[in-house]
Image 1 (cartoon, rainbow, N blue to C red):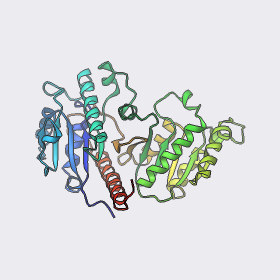
Image 2 (tube, rainbow, N blue to C red):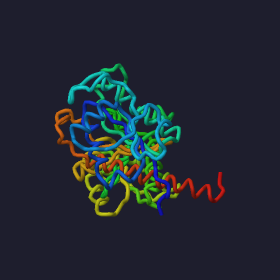
Image 3 (cartoon, rainbow, N blue to C red):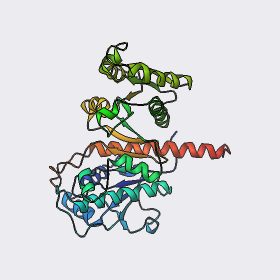
Image 4 (cartoon, helix red, strand yellow):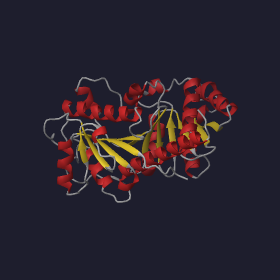
Length: 343
């Protein structure tokens, strides 16, 4: 049974020169999506108003400078950060847009941390644009984790057929080939916790090997036996249904067929390639290890089609739906704890 209270979800606009504004408007224009939550869009009002006008989609949004100024009954609120002077050229890389996009994320994160919203969803920003603004930046997840004071975040990719959590993501392949037992164990734990929040009571977890054929008994490398197997055994000792390491080239097929609920991938491409090959449009990025709920589209700013009214909002809709579902479960869990009189 889902929470009776409608969740409030923040949406950061992403790079204002990318497709973020367009896919947000198109997603909220879906009559099945709009009533699911109270939406707080964080961005620049000029960009929003031009996007609505260009797409000829009417989404009444109460524009405010501070969230507390919004009417309590407003179903869609636009929180204007006023970062830009005018509207940027669509598809144009710029430091101004990179700086603005980062401010939208910062604001949405703080709203979630302060419990003013129940979850946040991020539209894509451009790493190069942020770096042009003079900020060292490796990605949304690391930036949000730093704002949250979380030193141990992970990336989960999820669609209707498969869920994959990564031990490492945005680092060199050489570095990814040197995981620690502790990091692998923590990844399994975070994946287990996230699937419980998604409704899996006892998720079945499979862990990928690092080397071809999971090392072939040491023939192709010792990392699988020396690092991954002890982590799997530690997870089993902790009561989790965890198996591995398995050869990655066959494991994903087994998971898609229903043998496992979650796959633990050792590095970025090992997990991303099968997910995006299988269902790119509906694969959502979820940040784990944070005190807040954050989902995101799993695509970029698509500068080549920005401003052309041809961006597909399917992925944004999936990210919004998942954020609502996770927020509802968290609200429900919190309400149940309060009813039981637990601290």
